[in-house]
Image 1 (tube, rainbow, N blue to C red):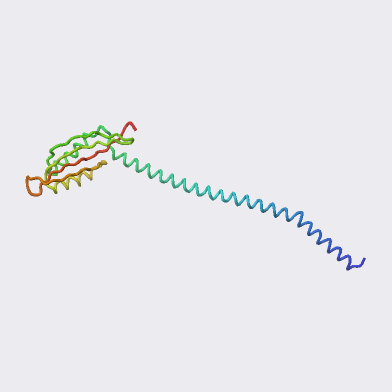
Image 2: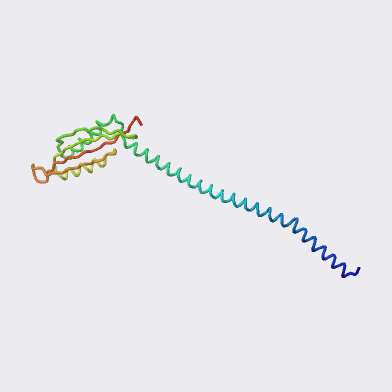
Length: 178
């Protein structure tokens, strides 16, 4: 055997070993690596979804905290039902302080709701328009949740600038049953 022939056989064997190594070692390793990468990518996608869900849950917790603060704030503005006479007294004192003369004050049927009670009061006042405007500003400053509705103004024949006012003011209270 000549040296060239030996080299050719050695070269063929070397290429055969490399081909067999690639076929039986590198190719299965690459396939296994591809499968593992797909699993890792799937897990990364799930992790990203979980991170997004966690961020949303944190936002929801933050919003829930803000809503609880708002509920606490509004509940602090709702007196207990036993304080209705105090609120009515405050409204009457403010009206008299502004120079308005109460004609009538009547309680209407109360409306029970799940978290609060609405007690409407029908009021009729007579006096100067500016005094009535000041009365409304003072009512607005009260630390209670109140709603003024069905406001009717009419000119009073008593004098210049005199008005008669009929309105319903709703006062809100805590509902202890809720």
